[in-house]
Amino acid sequence: MKTLNFLSVTFFVEIISVSSLGRQILLTETNIFYKN
Image (cartoon, rainbow, N blue to C red):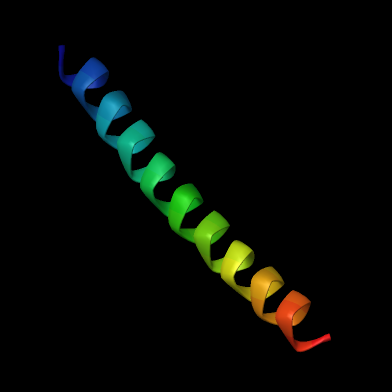
């Protein structure tokens, strides 16, 4: 049961970090797009 909990927490953290990274990249791309 502890292993399952740990995996779900890791998965959750991974999703958050990936989505925030994706948002950062998207913002950067948008900035570059509007500058040109």
